[in-house]
Length: 448
View (cartoon, rainbow, N blue to C red):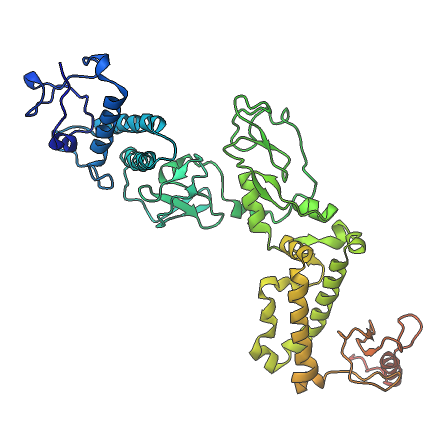
């Protein structure tokens, strides 16, 4: 029995050239297409097998693979289409291995294989009418419209094919997953943890050991082992606990405890939930360095410089909130990214410390400091009028509390030259006047 070339009409009608029981004109005797098992083995030389694989791919790609499958009322089932696509995919994979590497034909075959897999994925996960917003475990999932294929599902760790799959992203913690994985999620939104627990773990990698975790992932409780059987145990440098490969993708982040205690900014491997938590916490000013590690200011000169600039800005703030021009110009909004700088001088965010280490914060804050000082001392007459004259020497220019060569009385906030006023040995003239005035004024009579 010889195997004759099929007409083009047959290649467009059928996916699998080895299906039996189909009649066509010009086919083998009896109107039957022989199965692969019925053909003689010698007919399947490398050349004939390559031709048959080409037919399988052509048949698989002759259909519109990005359209919805139409199932007749009394026709075939989608399951049969899936089986046919699987067979065509296997034929493509076999041909890719046989073709010369980096050849044009091999590249074309790879492209065809991708198209076939996309079609198979579409048949397995048909698009449905999904709601645009879903709330689950404090997540607020928003339906995505992007067609990017470079996303990865945080639940099943597989690629999200944006062209043919529906997927969601949490607007709070940016957790993303397939629509089919939504009901399988067991991790609450990290943003809720940030809202209720705005504190860092300040112990360096507080490991408790796999035995304390019962040799299970700290998050999903999947069995893990350091030997990788049944699943590899990966340690999170932030929590010190061990996680499976589904919950720990070897993401890296700067660890707050290492920064505060060692002034170390090298990113370390963390689990997915810690990575999201640190990303949401990084702009929050929750680190009080004077309490956690006050000696850090003795070894990091940049911290001392930033602390002085912040102290000066706090001294400038009263000028701005009582100046109409400054309010109209919204000068204080130049620090809108670091509003805590105009509220206190001892709280830092992790982002502040990272920018101090890189030198970016010193440059930007010095520029803002210069702008503020220029407004008070040169541009605004009202702010200039609130300056001080040194009452001890009564010489020199107008003084302001944020000038580097001045000293300020802690009791009455009067400003003097630093060389003229010493906190412990010099008497403040303004304080002396106020004390004398209290003695001269008679006490007010009490009401009976």
